[in-house]
Length: 323
Ligand code: UFG
Image (cartoon, rainbow, N blue to C red):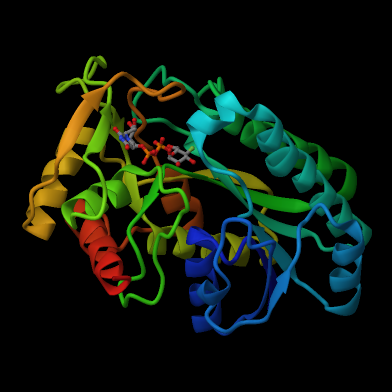
């Protein structure tokens, strides 16, 4: 199959490129390199450009027979989306519509879309199933949920079939060290803890210890990036086999508090992790844990690296190779 990976130079996209090439797919990456890295695409063809550019999309879709698109290109910082909603709605929503419209024009009818647990907002029930009410509490999550609803309309009107994958907390790195997390700036907990353990950053700020959780810090469901990519392969196969559009949670079903993650980083690295406690970060739900039964039953997905220490150890190996 020939697949366009939009945002393939980014963290999850670059791992996806590895997985697609390994399974024999023909891949083209479209990435504007505003956040990603050209050397992350593993040597596959890379077109530097933005999905807002319909002329570019018409050219690529017109010249190459794509069987489908995987769309990873979005801004991802929840707190930033509250302070600066405009670029979030422009990039994650408006530009996605431009991409969808080009797909419709060129009759490309299969899409795997990177959605997020942020569509649920503060959960009413844990673990969270896909049918949980969608009350996103920040523009990042609202934009993701808007795209999911637009995709339902595009299926009805244009027969564009899509699977939205609602990631919980993507983490870790390629187990063979070929790819990893290189966000600039880095805002995610695990890479920041690893930088602090390596002595390459200031003490980690712990955002709030007064949440209604057992130890007062936020609880998240960390899912290995390689496991996310396997789910994309299965989702794409399902679409190619005629499966209907759907949305799936991707998580391990186990929550870890910020303090537990900090302890795990100390355990894996064997190093102290300096930290300081500060106030809560805006837009952070207290507790996000997935019920991913639907992906397991319908896609046959099973995480291979559910252990938090494996996730951290792969991320640590990659971080050490970057020095
Ligand atoms: N945290 C800290 N200090 C930091 C960074 C994070 O205490 O320096 C805490 C956060 O408050 C949160 C937890 O660690 O409780 C995880 O934070 P991350 O920034 O690593 O991840 P988020 O849960 O905020 O967000 C991630 C993705 C989003 C996605 C969300 C869905 O970045 O794109 O998961 O669960 F929407």
